[in-house]
Image 1 (cartoon, helix red, strand yellow):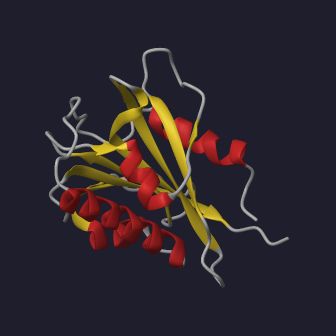
Image 2: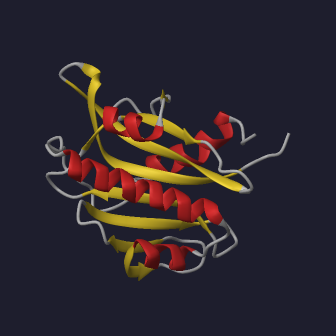
Image 3: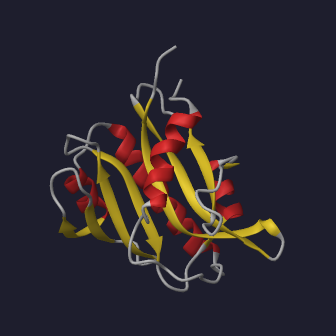
Length: 185
């Protein structure tokens, strides 16, 4: 059992409301090749696996995902340049009062985006959460089922912009992967 959905969304909404990753990407075109989509979703799956495997520090996680560009220290984030060139920037947020990673944000590189449908194919069903503000994109959340024996799992949150056909062809350019504790029954 994981934390109630309302608890999970509260922290994520705060991350996105505060601006999430930087630099801010402009509205991109959808990726044309499935290879690029697969590589991006593989990066997201790897990130989820790393953050949910065991406690890992924010600096160590950023180093496994790319090159650390700035550590703001204390309870603040570690910024990194992702190894996957389809992502322009990333940041690892620390769990308050510790050096442990609590979430990872990615901003896609200019000209890159993911279709919401591609995320659904990789991570299963999603839910659209409440809007943070009327001029902000919708937030889609994907819950990743915990692996047996693990104490943590993750959720993937994507800022989505509806396409010409609404949610059916919506795209995302910013994602946050949140570490969650698996609660026993």
